[in-house]
Picture 1 (cartoon, rainbow, N blue to C red):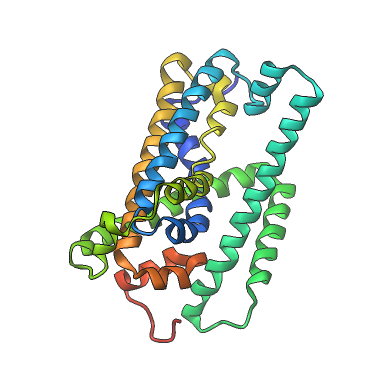
Picture 2 (picture 1 turned 30 degrees about the horizontal axis):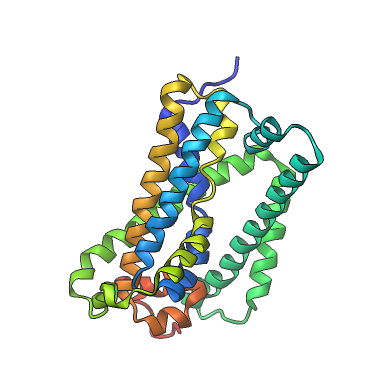
Length: 276
């Protein structure tokens, strides 16, 4: 008898799927596009994610299957060349997303290791190294992958929540708070463009669909799992965006575009004089 997944576990799957490298990778780029309107762009992307999750709720209830999105595409278009092409496109998008996450790691790792004055390793070494390490772990044991993923999600959430807590506490007295004013927002087209870029940070809630056959009381819990996970992440991301834009000048955000969260954290927690 297979283990049934409760509501809390299902919500954790959705949050864990979304709170990954996306927010670290796209935040700097989104600020460069939307400027002070970045929180609004995150809201726009989050609303798109909620609309998409509505479709996923209906599909997950109608076709509960561990194939998730692949199952939905096959049900909609049949097992044809077209559906095969769409599924391959989905696979390519995952490869691109993983590349984005690896690139983000390659940008953040040197800043972390700068705390020990170790700056001799090129970013590309970190980028390639994390891909090789992740591949080796996946090859070794899927059980180990699951444990590492669960631990990593908790760590990321703790880091982001601490960032939000400290940031909100110091935000009222920050000299850069005025950057959030409407006069510093970019135009509608750029806000929408930023929202499209940001949407990658919301990808991952669809993993709930893969777990749908194992979720207990699906009619009640599947909709709640989708909406609660996306809603929580939306609020978290909007606050992170507001804290970042309100903490750093736009010039510094542009300079540290690939590791802007690390840069935004420095004024909050202090940093060694040896850091860049």
